[in-house]
Length: 302
Image (cartoon, rainbow, N blue to C red):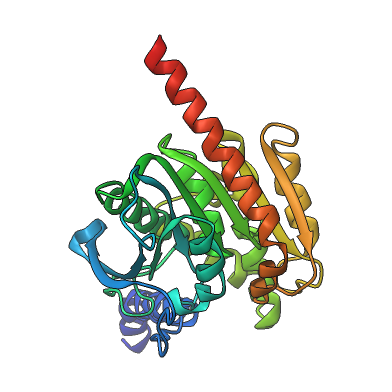
């Protein structure tokens, strides 16, 4: 009789065990929410709330040009990385603003002061970037034909994913993007001392099922081939989170086809050092938007 009851209870124990494991995976991968403690001081800005997918809202800072221009100006969405927020991208704000760009620094869902959701993921970062671009395009001082994205880490991968499906994006600056999510996940497993087989393999399969995408579909080394706008890949030489070799791997996916690689001193989160290279970034953006203007004029003449 006891054995019979044990056999009857076994499925319950198994289901309960898998539910507990799935809960632990979600909890272990949930990004820490860090709320902004500073503001874009020294710049004219306003706090905004804008709608995104799943009936959620995003928090952001809109930094327009200093005075209402005679013509609409190009604009950039600036997206942080995993566990980050808009404040962490502030080192880029003043130089880009002075270069003549309107900016929208935004928090992804489950980050900073934006709404929470069931989970955060690279595809959801991309959805939030797309929502931010739609909001930017509706602003009277913004030229909706000259929109770009600057993203860091997961935000960089999301920028490339968004650009692979939105032809309205005319330039992408990728800061410290990883080449493939599966490789990034394997590094996380190693750091946590979780063996790949069988537990690690289950975790990777479970994450892909939850986010609704195969890693190969959203991997920057693959999405870049589907991006039609110019792309600048920026990576730190001393990046230990994502080796600089992965920047070279992404670059190789579309090398020579309006894709540029800029390797700079610094680590994964030290992208503030890009300020020393910002003339290169601004030159890239200027050339990209000039290219978009020429294409737009050609389509009108046709």
